[in-house]
Length: 452
Image (cartoon, rainbow, N blue to C red; front, side, top):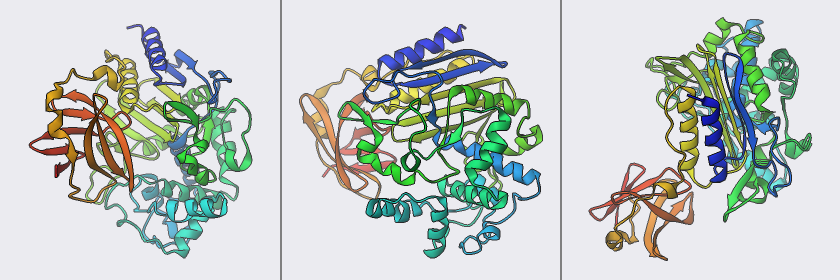
């Protein structure tokens, strides 16, 4: 298989279909097989994308926070079994350990996002940091969602706490500790933590995250997602910026033990265990969620450690083959309205790098079935809301020869087209939700809603 040609064709096809705008790199045995850049790094197409363009990593950042923890454990300044209250006795989490925070098993709630950080930004136009999270959680006595180890629940809040603990134990700002102890020893000289809304954009070679509204790409802060600015000063879960070459350097640094020993990495690649001894995040994150990595055991390639990142207008992916020398980096800074198209691209890329035949990259329009529209009238009408939920189908109707729906999404009414993708089955363009109509009801998201 000519992986270079196959991968590059996929990206060019995706770019032509408005699915991809960014950079990529794939390497085997320490040699780059393919790399590239397509599109633009700004919303008005004046700055062409470069291979060394810096991207916000979003949640891929978590593996660097975990690495910092492991360095402090090595020095004896931190233990994985230390509790949060050892460092912040005012917090109502007496039995939550560092290990719990790393594996999302501590029950730390995310409620501070909207109850404090967002509210402060909207009312006072102040951008708070992770230290503000500590203050809020203690003053408001925000209780845990569940007992430590009871279940897995992905939370950015736990990694915000880790960043503050690292800073307290190390005696230096989190940004400085990562720069001097992780990035520089690894040779990642173009990588850093930036808070661009409060500190300014470091240089113009930074990819701007762009969302799509009414078919046009606009900067994220010009959209309804402008509240992402409110979270810009947090640390630990996000806000590392880097390029594909430095991520390749990170892959090599892990293999060459420049920052962490293999023994330390083995600990990081071991999924957390719940109280019932099941793996934390199993299924959702492969074999389970470890220290800032989702872990998959492949019969051919061994352990594969991966993590993605997502923010409005941004998607990133880093896949590190632990036991076989392969690595994939994907960075995309323009939102595509078609969720299935995005997934089909990533699925095809992952197929090629594991020596499998990829399926085509398809938009939802490409998989639409030729429907028998004569039955559509039976689907139209108002639908009941039998239970609470973030997304509730409200009405189905025909318009301009197509089928549309209205739904209540997080308390607001939205309208979208329904695309026929199977027998009496329809999909949305900007979500995975599919709707199956039968016997006077609509089935979606494990709900059954009867037509009124």
